[in-house]
Image (tube, rainbow, N blue to C red; front, side):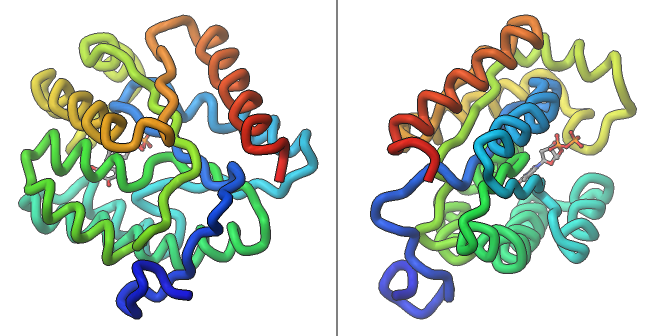
Length: 226
Ligand code: TYD
């Protein structure tokens, strides 16, 4: 059956009893989430699972080209929203759905929550339009688990300043990141069972321990490794 009971989005319905397969990592720039992707991948491989590590915007050649535009070319918030969702459509069809269909664990650095956080919260773009784009692009498909690396924007900003040249998002001021963080909180409030908040202010080893213990608890609650 196709999602939403319509033929619009051409994606299969997710299974009714969802194991933990599709895992996303979210948070403001500088929250440190990328550091923990590899340890999560190791953890799942140790359980004998195939792991697909991917990211958004990006994950396919076309989506990576769109990423380059979104991160570096000036554009308005609607254009930005359309491009991140266009990249996502490609990524969902080419990478995420095929991987989930063969039973792989997909670890994805950002997904639609980032569009609500950055375009919706940061840029102030229409939340209702984003909901519509989300429905068109991936229908009922949502991550089984979202790890939200939460950190005060000022702490994240100090971390970013220490490591690299900022892109169009990283160059935004503290108010922008306060809005991004508030929008993540809004997404979590709308679907609390999907989210785990990780206190990313702690030292990296402690954050890593939180991540793996949350992962183990969630996998166990879903009936062990699927
Ligand atoms: P990020 O994931 O932080 O990668 P890196 O660690 O290599 O900088 O960068 C992606 C940026 O894209 C980030 O600033 C958030 C932004 N973004 C959006 O604005 N909307 C989206 O839908 C997504 C997926 C990302």
